[in-house]
Length: 117
Length: 114
Image 1 (cartoon, chains in turn brown, yellow):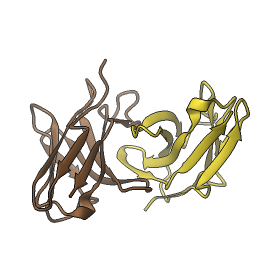
Image 2: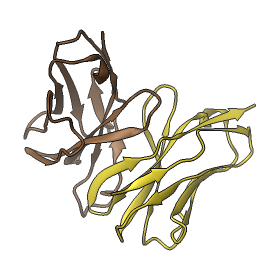
Image 3: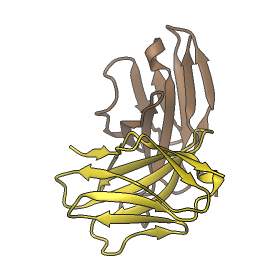
Image 4: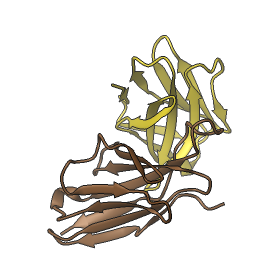
């Protein structure tokens, strides 16, 4: 049973380019979360999605950042016109539907390390 | 709003000894969950242990146990018989039950000495 998959593991972009980060949740999980970890810091919540719905995006910057979780395919975190301050590790996590055993626990992917030159 | 406080930026422990990593939390929610995650130098986040606020017994998972003191709002992680592979960052985290946004602490860097 594969865990949460994220790709790419490392991504290098120049300022002004777009970054697309992908996340495939664990099998049977319908909830996806994105977190950002700046160097030497803890993880900060960005957005919580269910299939085709954004449930909570209170942690996501209003500009340049967007997220989706389509009916088919992985969840995508998109950062437009990247700046140096976007350099961080971006983690995706997934959990089962509420009411299912284990729904309170989020399982994390390996992260995508974004470096903006 | 929820807040997690980890006051130990770094800890050392001798191999085979037990170590306690501190975590206090603040929330106005009645029902919530507490977690510990391990982040080795390779960077991935590994789930270790979960404690529900209404669980009467402290959670245990192998060498990990969570010392949950609800009145003091503390959720310390105890690692027994430390191993070299336990060297990593450890994050305490919490979420409200049924609302799954997780709030993380700033982490404790544990180093196990041979």
